[in-house]
Length: 133
Image (cartoon, rainbow, N blue to C red; front, side, top):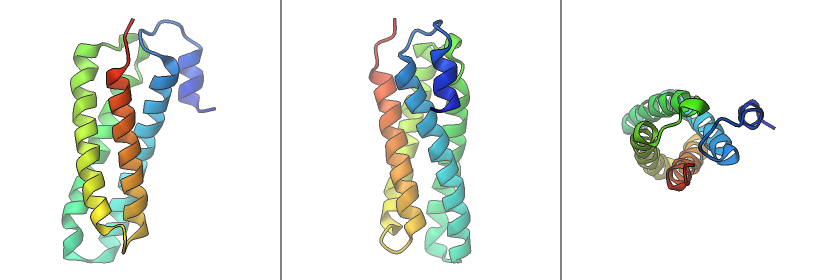
């Protein structure tokens, strides 16, 4: 069990499902890490065609990290703030995944990053659709 899930389950102050929120936090963290690693691997390719992938991975890392910080503050979860952030994160992850998928056949690191981005995109969308009590 992740620390995020343990922390969320230890406190009943949230207005959103703890399991769903923990899944999103885990996906955000995994995606940011995958994007950092993929950007580094892309740089080692020394291929000008990878520039867009590198930039999108760096953007995705930043957006996921910011979103992670905000949604981790469970007691302050407010749809008016988190909604637009989750929307932006889902869109950024989708665009990064598209670019990574273009290179997936020739670069395993891009395939892995694309999968992490798609998982994060879906987790953000699931949290957006969740009822808030």
